[in-house]
Length: 169
Image (cartoon, rainbow, N blue to C red; front, side, top):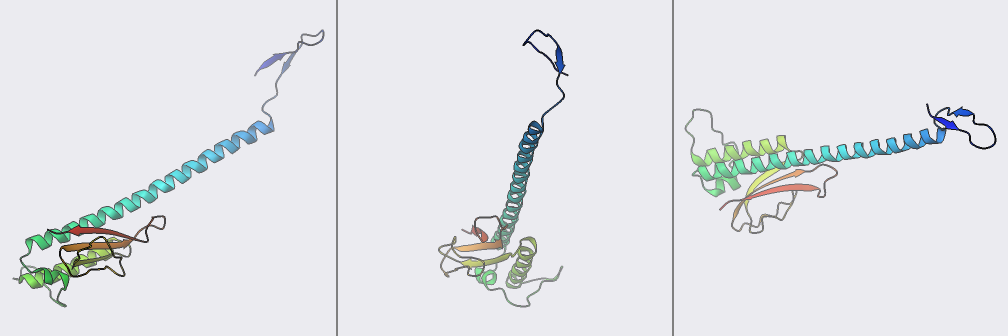
């Protein structure tokens, strides 16, 4: 407890302070509340950034895996661009490169759709690989070969569609 000395007049009595004023308590609560609100907003922004980074990492891995499969498979690029319907390769079965490429593309597209929200992947020829969207990928049929992965980003992201493009040599 603080003590104060009364110095006016003749008396030298001692008075005791009784506590905080209501105004000081309200001011402290307002400062604390605004600080906590700012902290909550900061945490939400960090979580949103983590989600977007995670999705971009998944897209990069998926695009890189398809590019690696294309580089080690002797099938022509056409087998990856337009995979044949129903071509399956069973485990242990001898599989020709065209059937293998078609099965690999179908499996890869399934992985893209399952791992990314609104995910879509394709292999195409495109001289301007960084254009297009999930609904209109804008492949013009000219070299080079590209692997494109599109997905829907979080609501707070800058673009409606997110994309990763892997250009093959």
